[in-house]
Image 1 (cartoon, rainbow, N blue to C red):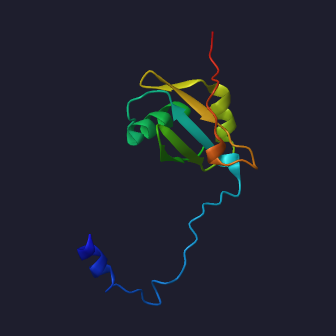
Image 2: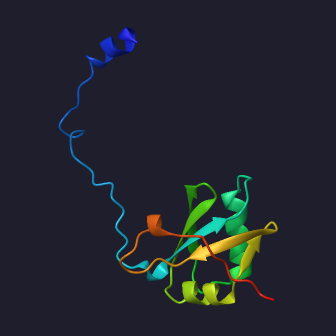
Image 3: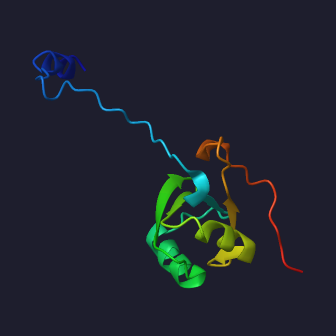
Length: 122
């Protein structure tokens, strides 16, 4: 441990590296955002999920799937038309597991997503 601490003493930051970068993600409009949760204990392959959803949803514009961990994904759409349409056509599943979709309100963030209820067709 002392060896690592001693090496850190020789490190320095130049003026270019010293600039601060704001890492907060600001989404101006939640109209193009959905949060998805898969109800499985298995780790989900995001690439396979993304390909499958593209084929099922037939969205007007492309969308991006970002892994948030714990089988939760952030889905960013290119169009505000797609999220309400996809929500109305649910419920959805992937590999026989339920996908619960959450639409954040304007004043809410992704962290506020709750997955306590799910619609079903009977």
